[in-house]
Image (tube, rainbow, N blue to C red; front, side):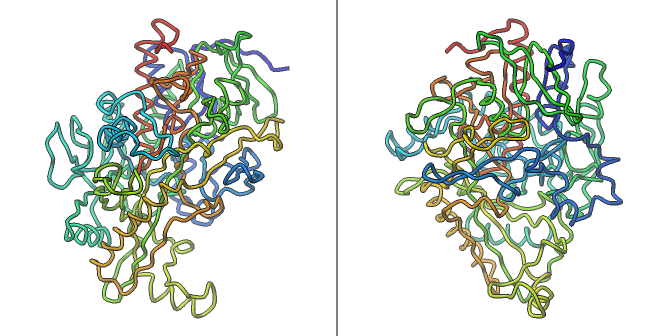
Length: 588
């Protein structure tokens, strides 16, 4: 029997970006908050020490910072005609584990979605006419606008010290920035990072064919910075150990480098690590949560009562907890009814690898977000009239690393081992770079999340089942954008250009992107979304679910900037509206 603990005002599940932001905001407002984190405590000085953090074998290959399938995994299938089987080793995406979550091991690309991304269905219908969007797509409006969330984007960027160049400042297009972005109230807190040769060449080639390259917004800091909380961060040293690694230099934004040093000193905050929440406890009426149940590292079960429950785990885990706790109705693709698990989306990427004879690059001088981007073909920045798809992709030249195990650029046909492979590595290591597309992923009826009827976790609870394949719309979009990428490649005049296109079926094995979105989406209609515009459950008013699980569809951009903005958006609604008068913030 679970041991019942003293009641708290707020219990937060997960202590990554969203959990840390909400904990800080709520404790500042005077509330007593406890955060429960499945993984271990992680701190820069002790866990990301410069003496051992640049260990590619430990962190990039053996995945020391990531969730282990023995802790929690998912079952997967491409469609409902297949039998879903458990993922035994994470490959396509890599959920984080421990304090900081996936915000520890990210590269640092920090985007704002376009204004049209937030009212996508309405925008497309208005621009192209009703019926232009294919009937198979379930694209939806978010229930709020870019203008409403712009200040939340700004707060996250200044918390994290993002390095970049404004493209549209107070309505005015700025030279050198992204002319397609939504208007912002002020510039980034830090200037862009210093460019190396590869992104410089990419930008020159893109500009030469009429495109609009700009520096990729980066959470790898271009200079020393003190954020609004008074926490100091250092300048990036371009070491090339960002993705899959914590930052030993205090120069990549994470919960550890931006919030936790202040949050952990607060008397009205507590973090419990190595404790796994197994369900949200419900009042017999099913309309009110009473807290959560969790199991600690010793296997002892506890009940933590709370007035407010915030689901701030990785997006997939938010959805599973809602399904296990029966918060909202599970989505049924056959009938289209139910909302929890609906609109699971991913990212639709492709790439081009270039080889040169007359250029020398140093791939080891790199950072996770050091690069240049072209947004001319992203979202609805271009006219889709006459196209057989909607959506688009950013094109990014971001040479993130030259690490010796993983970075081995060799032409097709090279043997995978032996003397010929060694020679090809030697000949091409300093003479190659690539660029890629980060494509939108739009919802269809058959891509969804639910509880697996067969497989269970170590506590006896059903695993979550993922059913996903790339929609035909997204494949057509990606191929069209990839053709545009080849135009940039041609302008660069390489010895050889190797194109990698996105194809079906989706393969769960090779790494692609840790950008899983949807399943617990926001919206204006409780029939098509489990959360209202403030990320509050339509069915259980004292439960909020914050993260990429809230995206009705995914844009052609990395999700973290929008996730951070959602955390501030929800925090404001909770403090200024809900806590003053608990109950539904939007009437169904």
